[in-house]
Length: 221
Image 1 (tube, rainbow, N blue to C red):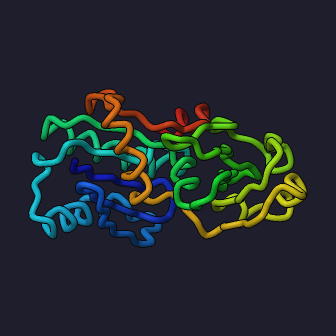
Image 2 (cartoon, rainbow, N blue to C red):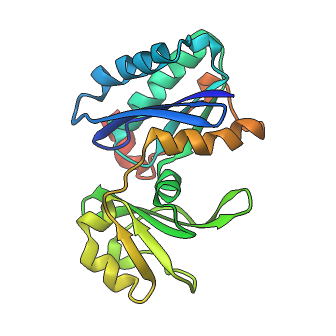
């Protein structure tokens, strides 16, 4: 199976190619240049492996939550590439990608949502991937959903922006904090494999970002 994955949900821009179990990835700090960088990065990666878009089995993208503009860029590029090549697509939660990157058994994943809030989710490893303990939500750090008993790893930029508040909220629960972990196309590719294998891909025109903060997203369009 050959899957191209894209993510522009944060200040990073990343692409990855899953090819029969091996992953090759590229990333850079893009700032506001995601739209300039994403396609050339994807093209370079495919050329390196001697592949055309039409030879892929599908395309995956970081579906959100995250930067509204970034989510639209990744989704739009995915739709354009997939529609032209007749490929199915899979959207992968950026918070689930954090859990995958943390390499922990239990991960509480928090992205900085600005305005004193975080995007939050919590996951536990299961036989075939991850089980959501708390689905993605928007909340204040001090009001983050409680965690079940056990030792958890905290990850994501929410811990960088609101470390003290989250430490207080989860006192006694956290064995490690990884604020430097961010959503990456490498983990999105890994997570997308199961979605493609289990037939949960969709046509390109059905791909859509997941904003969480919907009212703000609609006003910014």
